[in-house]
Image (cartoon, rainbow, N blue to C red):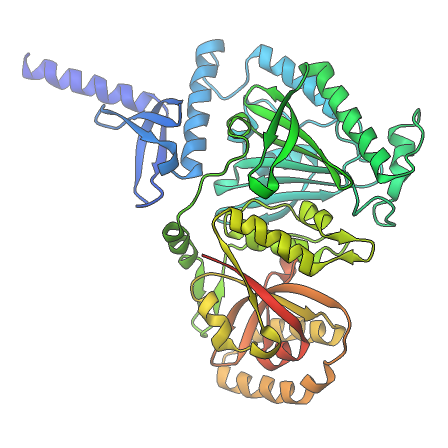
Length: 494
């Protein structure tokens, strides 16, 4: 071969690689990134070409979720281009018609123009559905809606709908809670009232059991009408394992379950996830420790705090404990849903925090993590908190959310933003704490939130409440915090 022909051939190979869609993949353990062309994704292996034209195979377990989703998107794009000549990510005509029919049954535009929800951004889907942004972090996102009484999804009324996303805001699952023991008969949930609008031809339910039967039957009938008879299988691991009815729409699975006297629950997950019955990929302690260390922020003013903890808005029912546990569990890469946690621990007197903690302990242990009880009533000291915060682990704190405390926390958090002399600030808030701490002994407004940071120079702790982004971090003097501590706390550790 002549030198000229060799150059031409090399150039053509180079152009061929560039003309194919390239993606960036990243290895979990090493963080190594590379630009590749996705060739195939099957049996848990990604086949790809490098810029040199060499072909390799790599287990998807060794790649970040964002890498796998990017590969799926690229391969779907190629398939779409091959089938309809568009070369884009649009669905085929046949798929589009199916999505339209499913959207009609759902009553909302869940599916858009792409072949898969899992390759879209969560923000785009949430915009179509009018679900509200709740939290967006480096490795997670969520969009939640506490629905109005006339809100309908697949022919009946869910009380709470949530889109959970992972890295780069790619969706991971949709969670919808229908009739449940926390809402039925509640003035917040309107009890059976919504059935008057949703099911005017049916007798209003006299019990939670009746309400659950109506919801489960309605959803199943509507999905069966358009997608055929469901498969029956189990979904979830160990304590979370439950029977479900399953309908598939291309690479999406609708999973409907009803736990006796507790709730009706609809999940929408990737088909691959349903095939695995919800068995999650295990993250090694060493990898999780490395990840959480990157979340620890150290500011010039000596503030040390944890970033990237998902926010959960506890909503109108005041589910502070379930919301806080969901935040901590999802941060530790343990799937959790506030509503399901609340329902399991709900009694006629409200949410039992101790029962909730026991339920969460079983879930956490089933995912190979540990949950510890802390004696914060007597041990609320920075030296005891920092050993967790320094490694990126938040502390769940039981306290009394008094009006005086909240006013002080909000005011001082705003004021400290403009402080330049931290020594003077430390003196001021110490004197204030000495004056006020004895007046914060009221046994009211029991609450649970997180301690996510500290400043040893000013003797302050950073607190995070499940009330939305504006309460994501507030600073209070440690003596003030200790004064409102009620019982103890918990920590989910490696």
